[in-house]
Amino acid sequence: MQKWVNTKGTLYAGVDVALERNYAMVITEQAQVLAQFGFPNGRDGYDYFYRRLEILEEQRQAPALLVGMEPTNYFWKLLAADLERRQIPYRLVNPFTVKRHREGDQLDDSKDDPRDAFTIADLLRTGKYTETRLLHGPYAELRQYVVLHDRLQRDIRRHKNLIRNSVGQLFPELPRVFKDFSGSTALAMLRSCAAAAVIREMSAEQFVRRVRAEFRGQRLQVSQLRRAYDLAATSVGLQDVIPALQLGSRLYIGQLEKLESQAKQVRTALTDTFLELPESPYLLSVNGLGLLTAATILAEIGDPRHYRRAAQLVKLAGIQPVPNTSGRKTRSKTPMSHKGRPRLRTALFFAVMRLVQVNQAFAHTYRYYQQREKNPLTKMQALGALMNKLLRVLWALMKHQTFYNPSFGLAD
Image (cartoon, rainbow, N blue to C red; front, side):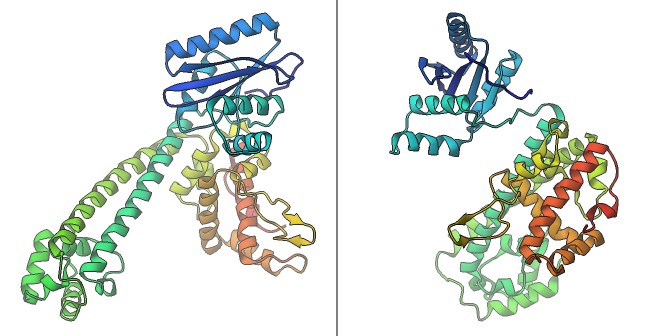
């Protein structure tokens, strides 16, 4: 995608994309509205959109036309992919920028399709857009696998919390025995009898036999079960609605196991896709950088050939320092912008958290940032600086197709 250069007479088409019907507004470089119309998602709707644009270009003898839209849900991808096939240039505008620009013009919170379409077109006209583009091929697949895996992990965490909440009512002392309820012994117990009131009505041998009947692992932790049995004798767990809570616990466990099986399938596909990409061996050469983390970073970046400088990746992650002062008040000397991709930023943060523990070069730099005489950093500031450094190191590895050298991570 070439950098767009506004020329005299260019037309700007802002499109407010939606699930069923999109709304377009075309303006001139002086913000004069030439046309506004709706069109549905689908071949007929898109063809109508293109015909209206062609008519306006001919009437105005426009040298160029630029289409813009917000990256709303997946709707924008449908139109963007079709625009690419027809080689019609397009750009994306930030939804937050659209909201603030619209409110600044109108001084109210009113919102409708024509207002948004005009605001998008006006942002194109004034150059307030991004160079974001659709991913293609294995990079697009990797991004989708990472998104799917992230969603499954959120669902897994949610169901673990639901299980913990159910058990907290039936047997609140159980976390003293099982810190994590996702172990095979803990799950077998929760499937068979999670309520302390039920457990204390059985003998210890009956309790162990009942749990063993539900066990699906390799080795049942009998000693932990006996500790749980002893705690059940004096538990303050509820004695009412036990069947309902027990059923809920079983259902949540079944859903958790299904989600974990699905996440395993996604991780396999994600791993295979990542390892096929040419950048994978260079990223994995960094000691302490895990495969899933490396895959997430590459998925969020996309094809590194689309970037010219490492600074573009830093801005993409939203980890570049930005000024934040007002009069005499300064919030921080080096605050991050936090305006980029949150998943990329999170992956970098946890990556450096591990690197300062297992990678000597990064550990040395981490200490240096905090102990240097001039402008020493706090622990969190040092981690932020390392996130920036890690991204620049990874950029160098991918750009030059070379393997990691520990000297890359040393402080200057």
